[in-house]
Amino acid sequence: MRMKISLLGLFAATAIAMPVSAQEFYLGASFSSASHDAIGSVSNTVIGSGDGQILSAFVGTRGSVGSNVFLGGELHYLMGSGYYNDDGGAALSDDVKMALFRAQVGYEFSNFRVYAFAGIGKGSIEEEGYPERTKGDVKTYGLGVETDINERFAVRVEAGMTTLSGLDTCCVYTNAGEAPIDIENSTVSIGALYRF
Image (cartoon, rainbow, N blue to C red; front, side, top):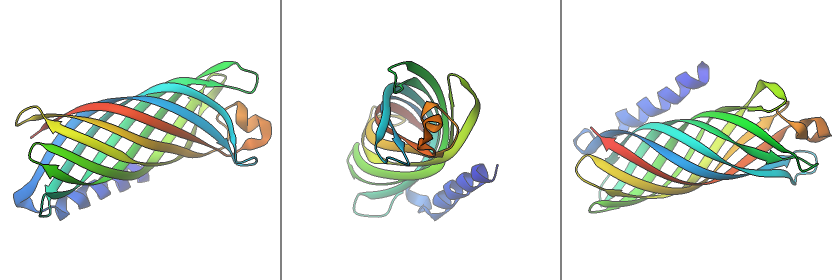
């Protein structure tokens, strides 16, 4: 609950800090294809890998700070699923949920924008054979491009890295003495948004 309040606080602070005359609000959704690696804390190497998909719903605000430069912030809620290959080659399904705040800085060319983003949040994972959800911290960063379809709608493409870290009891790797583990998700996503 505290983390949700903190994320909302970051988003509210971003909205308040924006110049009112140049501010916009929007909501959207995206689909990501993810390639993920499990990193063990003992060996500090990749001890498993897999593929999956992530769906995200988000709300955002941004505003111009002059010379076509803009700043913004977004709240994201992500749900993902995929498969990992354990040391024995077995495919294990997993279910991931994450909530995070992303800060954004970019440059606008008429109806086309390029931007970088970075963010923090909380997440959890539940893997096949491990019925309890394990919680961890989330960090994300990446690059994106966005273009307007009309005055209200825009589409975007992003490439990024999202890491769910500090997992103690989630999966086969923790039983192998590698806990806590980090799960690094390399993603390519497409999305759409609607501006108010």
